[in-house]
Length: 279
Image 1: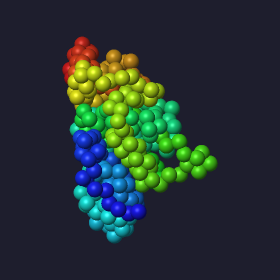
Image 2: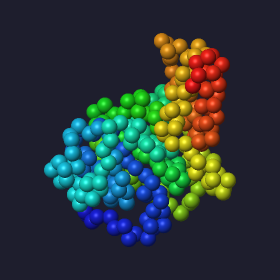
Image 3: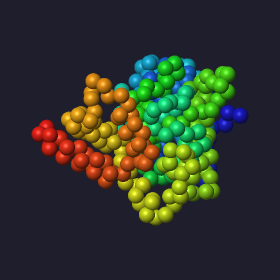
Image 4: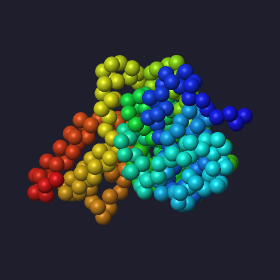
C-alpha cells in the first residue's frame, strides 16, 4: 500500500522530539532515484529531515526520477538540505551513526541497526543526532566514519550483501521508529561499544546527556590534541600509524560532554604553551 504517513498518529506526537531531532545524511549520492526513494523511506517511518552532501546531480530534488521515486513524499524531497561537506551536515549534531557495508578494524564502536537504534532513542531526546550513509559505489571514507560516534552494519546475506542505498535507509528508519515508539524509555544500548549498555534513566544521567558536545566541537578538540601530541613528539606526522584513529575510538566509546571537551583542549593548550608554541 502506498498510503502516506499521517502526522496525526498520537504515538508519534508523544515522541515528536525524537523524530524531529533525527536527520538522515546521504554523502555524495549518485543516483537521483535513490534520493527520491530515501525520501519515501523516511516519510513512511515518520521522519522528514534529509540532508545531502554534495550530490552528483545539482538540484536533485527537482529531478524527474527523484520525484517519481519519492512516490508521494514530495514534501520531504522538496525540503532536502544540501551542504558541501559532512562537517556542514553534522553542524549542531552531538551523536551520529555511520552506516557501513563492511566491518572495520578501526573506527567507532560497531553495532547492529537494532542496537544503534536503541542508543539513538536516548540520544535523540537530548539533542540533534544523525544517521550517515555513503555513496552507492564507494561508501563512506575512513575520515567520514571517524567523524561519527558509532557504526551500524546491516548483517546481510554474505553471499550477496549488496543493499541499495534507499533500502539501507529504510532498514534504519524502521529500526529507529520501532525504538522511538517503544514502551521501554531506557536506552538499552547506551554508549557502550558492545551495544549492551547500562541504564541511563536517572535525572542525573539525563542532565549530563543534555550537555553533550557537538560534532564541530569534537573535531576542533581532535585537531588541538593532535597538534599537542606532535609537538610532544609522541605523534610522528610522517608515521602517524593509527594513533588518532584509536584515540577517536576511545572517546567515541565514552561519549564527550562539552565540559570534557574543554578539559582535553585545556590539556592540549598547556602542552603547547609549555613547548613555546601557544595554542
